[in-house]
Amino acid sequence: MAIANPRCETRVMVIETSRLTLESITPELAARIVSRDRRTGDDWHAEYPLLEELSLLRTLARTHDPDPVFTLYMIRRRDDHIAIGGIGYFGPPDPDGRVRIGYGVVPAARRRGFATEALRAAIAFAADRGAATIAADTLAGNSASQKVLIKAGLSEVARSGSVLYFELGIRKCGDRGNERCRSRNGNGRDREDQV
Image (cartoon, rainbow, N blue to C red):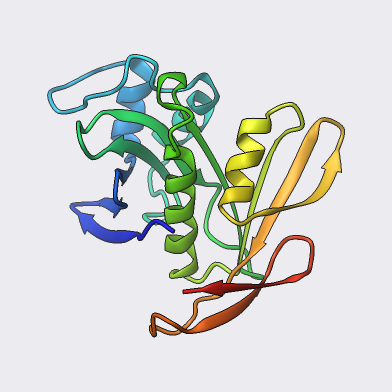
């Protein structure tokens, strides 16, 4: 599993994995991404942002006080600092600890494990901040996204028309490296993980 190494840099939350950096997107940056107002250091892939991200970015751009943690993040490759996608939470955990998440990687960066690595880091990050359940959905015809969700530990819990719903029950385990903890996957079966 990718190890999330979070830090906060002047209103920007940063989560690092072995190959990626996830950087929280401020409302100001969201507005620039939507308008394609590139500046020195932005380093956005030519295919970024994905069409599916634009409405979320527009909403964030209009937000005056976004949640500093459970927000949208830009996915950057660490080796060249190019933004290749986005991942984000649809708000903080609800009273039951459930948080919804979505993600996407530009076509040129797919099939390299980046989406799975980013999702695993985002799950660990959310778990460390009180999330008890991670929820996501994808289209029935999007087998690549389904594989990412399954590799990250989520299980299909429901279907409605062409939409598949996935969940992962999580809990933070102790700090001992060889401790085993039990968590509930989306289909209600216990899952034992090495942490």
